[in-house]
Image 1 (cartoon, rainbow, N blue to C red):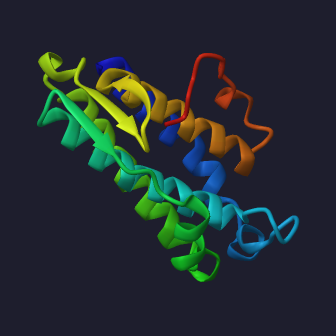
Image 2 (image 1 turned 60 degrees about the horizontal axis):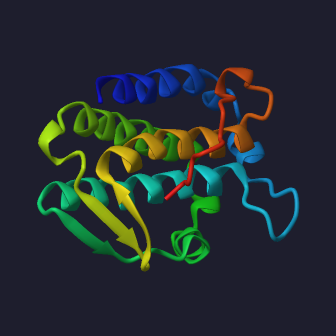
Length: 161
Protein backbone atom coordinates (compact mmCIF):
# COMPACT_ATOMS: atom_id res chain seq x y z
CA UNK A 1 0.00 0.00 0.00
CA UNK A 2 3.06 2.19 0.17
CA UNK A 3 2.78 2.79 -3.58
CA UNK A 4 -0.83 3.98 -3.23
CA UNK A 5 0.10 6.30 -0.36
CA UNK A 6 3.03 7.70 -2.34
CA UNK A 7 0.81 8.15 -5.39
CA UNK A 8 -1.69 10.12 -3.30
CA UNK A 9 1.06 12.34 -1.86
CA UNK A 10 2.56 12.90 -5.30
CA UNK A 11 -0.82 13.95 -6.69
CA UNK A 12 -1.25 16.46 -3.85
CA UNK A 13 2.26 17.89 -4.38
CA UNK A 14 1.72 18.18 -8.13
CA UNK A 15 -1.66 19.90 -8.09
CA UNK A 16 -1.34 22.18 -5.08
CA UNK A 17 0.72 24.91 -6.82
CA UNK A 18 -1.83 25.02 -9.66
CA UNK A 19 -4.77 25.09 -7.26
CA UNK A 20 -3.19 27.89 -5.23
CA UNK A 21 -2.91 30.00 -8.40
CA UNK A 22 -6.70 29.99 -8.80
CA UNK A 23 -8.30 33.09 -7.31
CA UNK A 24 -11.13 32.90 -4.81
CA UNK A 25 -13.39 34.62 -7.33
CA UNK A 26 -12.56 32.16 -10.11
CA UNK A 27 -12.96 29.20 -7.75
CA UNK A 28 -16.50 30.38 -6.92
CA UNK A 29 -17.70 30.61 -10.53
CA UNK A 30 -20.16 28.06 -11.82
CA UNK A 31 -20.19 27.24 -15.52
CA UNK A 32 -23.89 26.46 -15.18
CA UNK A 33 -26.38 26.36 -12.30
CA UNK A 34 -26.39 22.55 -12.21
CA UNK A 35 -22.57 22.17 -12.14
CA UNK A 36 -20.28 22.52 -9.16
CA UNK A 37 -17.80 25.38 -8.93
CA UNK A 38 -14.13 24.60 -8.27
CA UNK A 39 -14.77 25.30 -4.58
CA UNK A 40 -17.63 22.84 -4.56
CA UNK A 41 -15.53 20.18 -6.29
CA UNK A 42 -12.80 20.58 -3.66
CA UNK A 43 -15.56 20.53 -1.02
CA UNK A 44 -16.82 17.26 -2.49
CA UNK A 45 -13.27 15.90 -2.29
CA UNK A 46 -13.16 16.90 1.39
CA UNK A 47 -16.45 15.04 1.91
CA UNK A 48 -15.03 12.07 0.03
CA UNK A 49 -11.95 12.09 2.26
CA UNK A 50 -14.19 12.18 5.34
CA UNK A 51 -16.38 9.32 4.14
CA UNK A 52 -13.43 7.24 2.99
CA UNK A 53 -11.61 7.70 6.29
CA UNK A 54 -14.69 6.19 7.94
CA UNK A 55 -14.70 3.30 5.46
CA UNK A 56 -10.98 2.60 5.83
CA UNK A 57 -10.94 2.53 9.62
CA UNK A 58 -14.24 0.70 10.04
CA UNK A 59 -13.28 -2.02 7.54
CA UNK A 60 -10.00 -2.52 9.38
CA UNK A 61 -12.00 -3.43 12.50
CA UNK A 62 -14.09 -6.27 11.05
CA UNK A 63 -14.08 -8.80 8.21
CA UNK A 64 -17.13 -7.24 6.49
CA UNK A 65 -18.90 -3.91 6.72
CA UNK A 66 -22.24 -2.75 5.32
CA UNK A 67 -21.82 0.99 4.82
CA UNK A 68 -24.33 3.69 3.92
CA UNK A 69 -23.68 5.94 0.97
CA UNK A 70 -24.11 9.69 1.07
CA UNK A 71 -25.96 12.23 -1.03
CA UNK A 72 -23.00 14.17 -2.40
CA UNK A 73 -25.08 17.07 -3.74
CA UNK A 74 -26.80 17.52 -0.38
CA UNK A 75 -23.44 17.45 1.43
CA UNK A 76 -21.95 20.08 -0.90
CA UNK A 77 -25.02 22.34 -0.68
CA UNK A 78 -25.48 21.95 3.08
CA UNK A 79 -21.90 23.04 3.77
CA UNK A 80 -21.99 26.10 1.48
CA UNK A 81 -18.52 25.44 0.10
CA UNK A 82 -18.98 28.10 -2.55
CA UNK A 83 -19.00 30.84 0.09
CA UNK A 84 -16.00 29.50 2.00
CA UNK A 85 -12.42 30.70 1.55
CA UNK A 86 -10.56 28.98 -1.31
CA UNK A 87 -7.38 29.06 0.76
CA UNK A 88 -9.05 27.38 3.74
CA UNK A 89 -10.66 24.71 1.55
CA UNK A 90 -7.31 23.89 -0.03
CA UNK A 91 -5.62 23.58 3.35
CA UNK A 92 -8.31 21.26 4.68
CA UNK A 93 -8.25 19.18 1.47
CA UNK A 94 -4.42 18.94 1.54
CA UNK A 95 -4.07 17.94 5.19
CA UNK A 96 -7.00 15.53 5.15
CA UNK A 97 -5.49 13.72 2.18
CA UNK A 98 -2.02 13.65 3.69
CA UNK A 99 -3.60 11.98 6.70
CA UNK A 100 -5.33 9.42 4.46
CA UNK A 101 -1.98 8.67 2.80
CA UNK A 102 -0.61 8.03 6.30
CA UNK A 103 -3.52 5.69 7.06
CA UNK A 104 -3.06 3.85 3.76
CA UNK A 105 0.66 3.30 4.20
CA UNK A 106 0.21 2.02 7.75
CA UNK A 107 -2.67 -0.37 7.14
CA UNK A 108 -2.08 -3.87 8.44
CA UNK A 109 -1.75 -6.14 5.38
CA UNK A 110 -3.85 -8.76 7.20
CA UNK A 111 -7.00 -6.63 6.82
CA UNK A 112 -6.62 -5.63 3.17
CA UNK A 113 -9.05 -8.33 2.05
CA UNK A 114 -11.75 -7.28 4.54
CA UNK A 115 -14.81 -6.27 2.53
CA UNK A 116 -17.47 -3.60 2.29
CA UNK A 117 -20.80 -3.12 0.57
CA UNK A 118 -22.06 0.43 0.08
CA UNK A 119 -25.83 0.85 -0.01
CA UNK A 120 -26.00 -2.85 -0.80
CA UNK A 121 -23.75 -2.48 -3.86
CA UNK A 122 -20.61 -4.44 -4.52
CA UNK A 123 -18.31 -6.46 -2.43
CA UNK A 124 -15.16 -4.36 -2.36
CA UNK A 125 -11.94 -5.14 -0.52
CA UNK A 126 -10.24 -2.54 1.65
CA UNK A 127 -7.27 -2.70 -0.70
CA UNK A 128 -9.52 -1.89 -3.66
CA UNK A 129 -11.26 1.07 -2.05
CA UNK A 130 -7.95 2.57 -0.93
CA UNK A 131 -6.57 2.39 -4.47
CA UNK A 132 -9.89 3.52 -5.93
CA UNK A 133 -9.91 6.57 -3.64
CA UNK A 134 -6.68 7.90 -5.14
CA UNK A 135 -8.12 7.60 -8.66
CA UNK A 136 -11.43 9.20 -7.64
CA UNK A 137 -9.45 12.15 -6.34
CA UNK A 138 -7.64 12.53 -9.67
CA UNK A 139 -10.90 12.24 -11.60
CA UNK A 140 -12.31 15.30 -9.82
CA UNK A 141 -9.05 17.23 -9.87
CA UNK A 142 -9.17 16.95 -13.67
CA UNK A 143 -12.46 18.85 -13.52
CA UNK A 144 -10.73 21.67 -11.66
CA UNK A 145 -7.50 21.52 -13.71
CA UNK A 146 -8.53 20.15 -17.13
CA UNK A 147 -5.13 20.88 -18.69
CA UNK A 148 -3.16 18.97 -16.04
CA UNK A 149 -2.09 16.05 -18.23
CA UNK A 150 -0.14 14.50 -15.37
CA UNK A 151 -3.47 13.67 -13.73
CA UNK A 152 -4.66 11.52 -16.58
CA UNK A 153 -4.74 7.83 -15.87
CA UNK A 154 -6.59 4.78 -17.02
CA UNK A 155 -10.00 5.08 -15.38
CA UNK A 156 -11.10 1.73 -16.78
CA UNK A 157 -11.75 -0.83 -14.07
CA UNK A 158 -12.03 1.94 -11.49
CA UNK A 159 -15.34 2.08 -9.68
CA UNK A 160 -15.10 5.31 -7.62
CA UNK A 161 -16.79 3.94 -4.50
